[in-house]
Image (cartoon, rainbow, N blue to C red; front, side, top):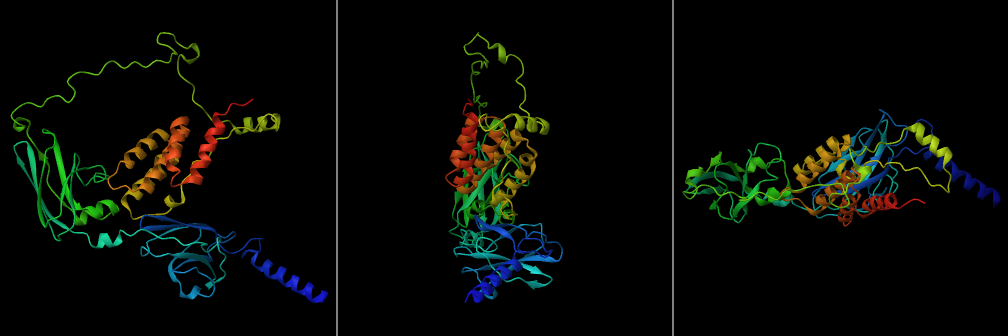
Length: 410
């Protein structure tokens, strides 16, 4: 009996040891890890970590199924993509309203390693996406949009190819060929008829552009919205025709003088704050090592600046226009550490037409980081607090860091 028990234990150890070594003989398993799925409107963003020690003779097979994927139904699942190492992300656009499960299978020398480990290379829970896809398929195409000037107003007449669809008419001060023009345009009116007409009263003397499209396309953020929209040429209401009178000033009197001071009371300066405030710079590695040797557990730990964090949902590619604009900011000014410029771009993006609440929460999460790195801790805390409704664990970590930063030492 003891001998049989020893043989059994040895068999378990050997079998686990086989899968605890990678293809190079290192102590690691030949499977991806940390597989994660984030729903992002009508998309699912998958992220994972590559198997250690893999190179060109390994690819990863991404599978999807409407049930939890295991060895019994692996062959029934759909192969939606095959990717090489170092990609570590894939964006899927499955049918909405269904609980979807995913797995990433390692293909070594053309042979799949059909071993699935929940929460490692297969999902431990399902993910669903909301469904604007059907609304987009049913969207009307606007055929024409004509703009005519009548006294001090603009008469806009459109023709669509489908009735009972809400057609939005948007006004912009820039041509709609420019990036982001649709997101910040003003809604001038809407209608549900095949042929509809609205009247708009913009400021005279300026050049205005109009576009008409199905409301579903505006909310969905699709990149090919121009194929379903109609546009008018540039329109200007002459100043002389604006009711026969000159335009009155929007601000008849100047604002009172705004005076900014660094004093506790007006006229009583703080000597230490005269001149330029020095820029906060990170410590050199030599300084950090020296302080680490001096400080002990009783004196506290050295403060280290955190690394900027990008959420899993924004690590993949997207066909959504607003998601593409967000990723462009994150890959640009945000990654470069130009926090003031990144915050301004994020603020402008947050005002986009049709922006959903989850995307707004992610933008607030990134604006909180911008404020933190600009040393505006109060604004950063409020941004993270607002984002925590949708991203609580990530926001809470930053709020705790802010609390520690403002807690006096001693």
